[in-house]
Image 1 (cartoon, one colour):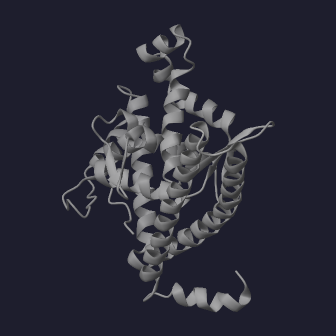
Image 2 (cartoon, rainbow, N blue to C red):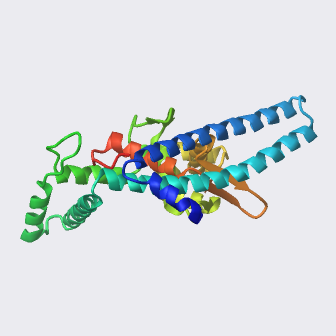
Image 3 (cartoon, rainbow, N blue to C red):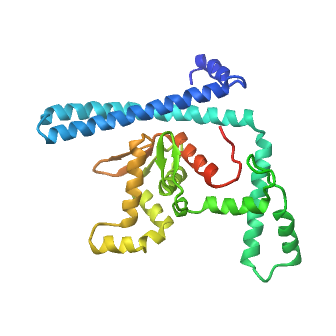
Length: 292
């Protein structure tokens, strides 16, 4: 940010203004997503018109050139916008909740999970100290907004579920921003968040596919996968990944590009993917995560 605007930005992040700033930025993100959908729909319509003989190849090429130029500028705008949105979200968390308390809660949950892992790994061989520690931890209070009687043992079970594959939760689809998301799409969003960051929002498609296959070995062994292989329709696991990417792309959250050298997937709306994960957690796991 230019020095001449830094004071303005600091004013927008002041305690009394930051929530309003966050709402304004999220509105911009939503508007940007809608524009992206309209642009993509427009170029798809132009493609259909060309195929139907309603547009010449030259006219279509010109529209596609304009679309490509717009997409490059939009990608840059979205990257900057989401950087500012994330900075604002961090400030909102600081204002709305004591981050020290949050850190301690997270540290305690991490400790409890480690103790439970050790206990399960040495089932039948636990020392008296192990048994006593877990007995004390599991009964600690872990109050949430929805249940003040919640215990740490329940939080451990919820966190284990949260760390598992979202696609395995039956009938677990959620609504966010007027769209319905499946658990499998949440899993793809998680993977994209893991292998990209603000500095490097793009990843190689081959790398993404490989990491997805490592995370979904059950899909490779499923009946549907064997049927797809027998019919020579490609890898079933990759087809599932492609379906979620297509959906996220239609919402303006990611973009797929390809040239002769490589194919890439670029995260355009990192804040949107994070919001999707948080909404999934709020609806399925009572961990009382920070809400913006």
